[in-house]
Length: 146
Image 1 (cartoon, rainbow, N blue to C red):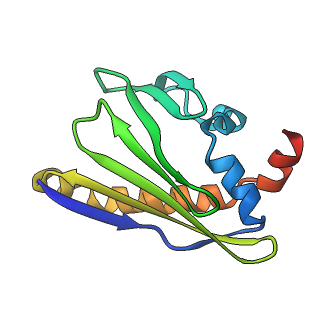
Image 2 (cartoon, one colour):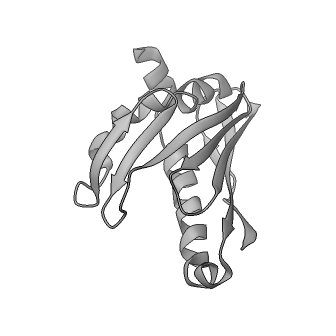
């Protein structure tokens, strides 16, 4: 196995870093977008503030995505549990002006070389797409509703 690293392009979020942090550091906020998850691919989904447990079509067991570290107004780090590979994802955020926050996603994982050759471009596209999707959340609106 070799450690692989993927980084998204930096994305602009039209919200203060505090609002972005408040939403991304609590996984229960994903309940707001549960309806966007393809029901034909996901068999079970349990969400709490620190963990998402998910049973995906084609996997024998539930995997968990857990927040393993929070650096206020800066980074949220996630780890995968019950996964055949060790994977961590970071969401980094930085406010460059009022209501102008930049985010970047980084994924590091011990991916077997043969597997990496097959999924390298798909992982990069996935991390880029996830960053674009996260940049579009209405963070300030969600915080105001809490």
